[in-house]
Amino acid sequence: MAEKICGIYKIQSIIKPDRFYIGSSKDIQRRFRGHKRNLINKTHHSHKLQRHYNKYGKEDLVFSVIDEFVFISREHIIIKEQFYLDQMKPYFNESRFANSRAGVKASMETRKKQSRKSKGRKKSPEHRRKIGDANRGRKFDKKFGLKISMALKGKKRKPFTDEHIKNLSNSKKGDKNPNFGKDMTEQIQKLTALNTGRKQTKEQCRATSVRMTEYWATHPHRKHTEEERKRCGRPQSPERIAEIKEWWRLRKENGWISDKKAQFRERDENGRFKKKGKS
Image 1: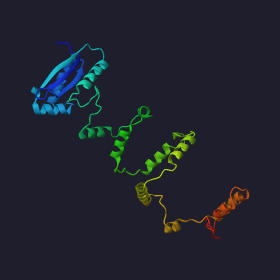
Image 2 (image 1 turned 90 degrees about the vertical axis):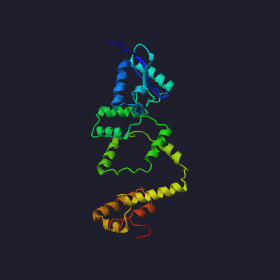
Image 3 (image 1 turned 30 degrees about the vertical axis):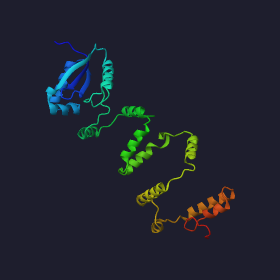
Image 4 (image 1 turned 120 degrees about the horizontal axis):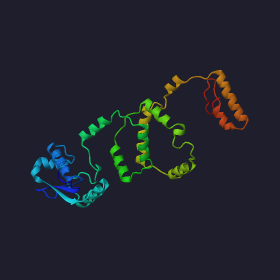
């Protein structure tokens, strides 16, 4: 039985020597066999190496060991491989990180497979808590934020269902709200100071006006027309009108409200507030 070789290996092209692949293994001969098998079956993880093999054949690739050492641990091998990746910058390696797929773009077919596999899968509360703890306090750089913003521009999300809106509301009520029980005076003062004197450009004002006009035209709580107000107006009962008048009289007698303000709060026989100057 052949002795196992631990170390760093290279798969290099003869026709194009500047193109090669760097890898590591505690059993390099076995790893070579795995590479050859995947290339023959056209299932190699490196698309560049697979395309090169399909075009030039197996005779063009040379397998060699560039650094042999005694196996200590998997972490030691990864550190060694990362050193060679940083120094040699191999063409056939799609990822620039050892033992990682970071930076590798998945094909559309792979994305669809991953999507179908993930649909309907529910995460356990412990799994969700771990994800939350890992992302809490995480800050993205401005370049990454700008990239996300440009990708989402022009895309319209689907409108929320009534059930979804209700769930969102319930998830932030009471002690579930992240600001529950906190003194927000300092934050409010900071926001006030930040927005004081802030002016929008004419283009921003025009865009805001157009956006709000479209919003209120389709919003369920839009401003009602005169005909809708007449149709929906409901007169108050005499008992309710008397109760409201008594309440406002007490406020006026006890000095809780000025005479001028009380003038606006007087109601007519239908219980509606009277307008200024009308008896």
